[in-house]
Image 1 (cartoon, helix red, strand yellow):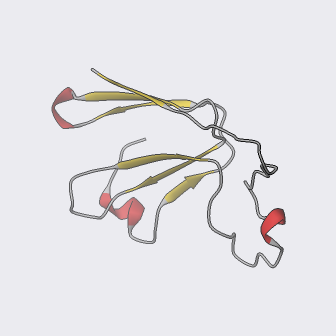
Image 2 (cartoon, one colour):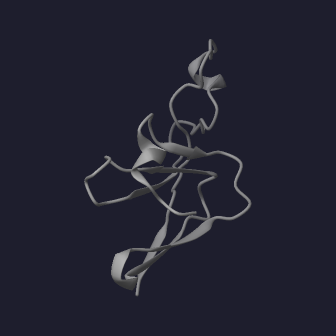
Image 3 (spheres, helix red, strand yellow):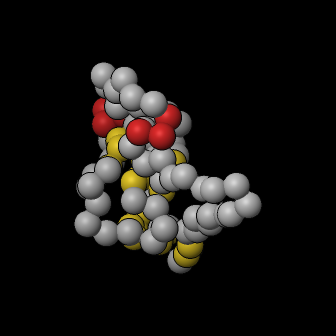
Length: 96
């Protein structure tokens, strides 16, 4: 996908039906980053138009969809963690 400031004038790009859990970003001049996020099902990309950077954010959940009127536990992407338990989410970033 070719990035352009116009893609982000409304807000972030949210990918919630991914076929992959990895992406490669190649910036100006050939700088390259590979992001692997096996534990997270969603991806947000955003940038402030004209700022010269891209934020790549693997997500477990995200803000309420338009028209959502459910409870917190019904919210898309929510993960319940019982008292005394823990849950980890990880990602790997490789530069080069």
